[in-house]
Amino acid sequence: MLATQQPVLRRFWYPVMPLEQLGDGPQPFRLMNEELVLWLDSEGKPHAAEDRCAHRTARLSLGWVEGDNIVCPYHGWTYDGGGGCVRIPQTPDRSAGRAKVRAFNAEARYGYVWVCLGDPLTDIPHMPEADEPGYRVIHQFYEVWRTAGLRLMENSFDNAHFSFVHRESFGQFDKPIPAKLNIVEEDFGFRFETVAPVNNPPLQKKLLKMDSDTTERHMTSNWFMPFGRKLNIRYPNGLVHAIITYATPIDDEHSMICQWAYRSDSEEDAPAEQIIAFDRQVTEEDKRVLESTDYDAPLDTASGEERHMPSDQPGMVMRKMLLALLARFGEEEARISGARIPMKEKAS
Ligand code: FES
Ligand code: CO
Image (cartoon, rainbow, N blue to C red; front, side):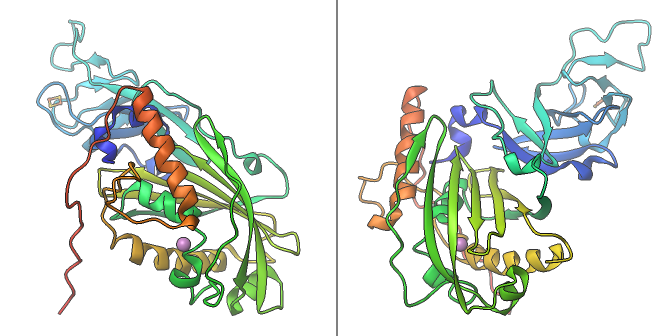
């Protein structure tokens, strides 16, 4: 599936940028190949519009914010949050007329600007830990990966990769068969619970305050269609490490990885910096392999293009549900043959 070619995917919310990055003025972001300008108004509410002035096409993201509006850096045409041109400095006595740029839905939530390019099909998922006392938030990663959202989502729920991809962090190489899952399908996603045995390397021992060489993760997983997931991990000592990861589609082969965590312990128990360091190692292990896969994963699992095994179940359900979503909105799956990302040139 090529994310940018499926109009229905424009009707979901995606986190696009940490709010704090907009503190110094407007910023550009490419979402599903749409060039956007993002800015905060005087009350701190985010806005998103086409990053292309209606006058001579200059990038509004090079401009500045004045009150609630954005000012073009070229001749100063000024647009409000709805994309309407409210001021043309060269003709102050005439109304700005019909000049406008396209504006999109934007919301602030969980420390990010979220954007929906169309008429939203569903809300931004609710994260109870964000309001519950006893949790702290740790912002972990905001970075571009050369992989498609579907690849990252499948990987997130694929417990068969632990023993291989993560054998140097927490995976148990000698236990390659994950537990069978009971997946509960929802309107726009799914959930399941499972238990996975994992290794407990030295840094984790310290962060979890658990001395054993191995432990168990009790995991509650949520998939938020199309490219969001939540993984709530509870360890046997009661500690909760819940991670939220979005693969926001920049284009068909690049995703902006937005990951943050809620932790039930305190900064004194486990410094955020060390938690990020451990999750960084795990994430790099995933990244290396994911960036080696074809970016156009087929939704039609019967096509014979890829072979499957029973532990692929979450990814199979995901593909089936996405195919049903496309059908519901009268769309065919868009594909490209040989959608392989070339190996990065090795530095010589
Ligand atoms: Fe924006 Fe002229 S290009 S005001
Ligand atoms: Co992984």
